[in-house]
Amino acid sequence: MAEDRNIEDLSFEQALKELETIVGQLESGEAELDKAIGLYERGDLLRKQCAARLDAAQARIEAIRLDGEGKPAGTAPFDAG
Image (cartoon, rainbow, N blue to C red; front, side, top):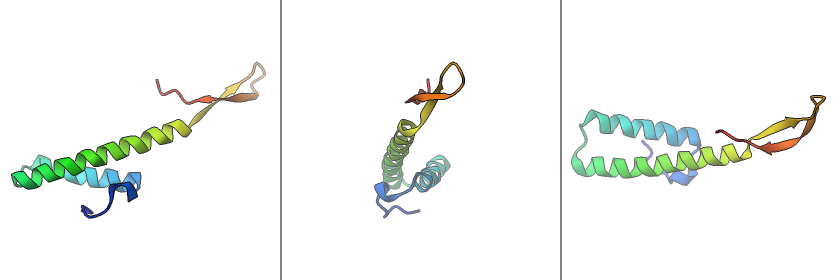
């Protein structure tokens, strides 16, 4: 695991992979309490980083609006809802 790497320097994929590793370690129940707490804290930071990266990517996605003839008439912000 890359616990010594700065979370902000990780790609989305790297952060997600590390988060999955941490979840697996926590679910196994084999980590001692102090290590489990540290894993949980890093996992929470990784989760927040992944969410921020997804939010940034979503903000960049634009839906193309079409006019009555089916031609692009502009863009509108992506709405995931």
